[in-house]
View 1: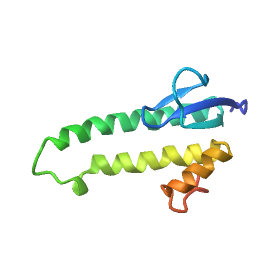
View 2: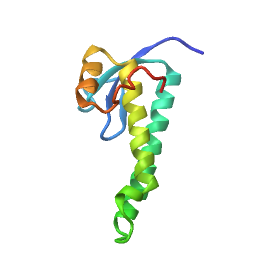
View 3: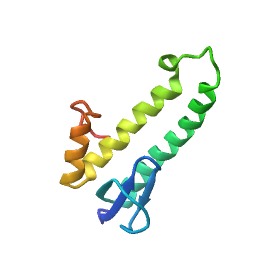
Length: 111
């Protein structure tokens, strides 16, 4: 396994991962190996799929949000995304994620 870490810039909302600070606006700066970036990309891809399933569910009036497994899967995966960013991010990234309260004390878990 390669331990050569590179700097990446992450835009969570769109699932973008780039090595350029000028390609588009970014939320977080992280240092990650190729394997870690592959895992993060898989989380983003998984949530993209769940977003489409939730979009379809939103158009079915008798299905309630709180009983929707796709929304639960999205929530669980986005927590993993933020957990990885917390672990790999710079101090500013960690501080911002802590202020969001999204990890609820899970920051130190292996995501």
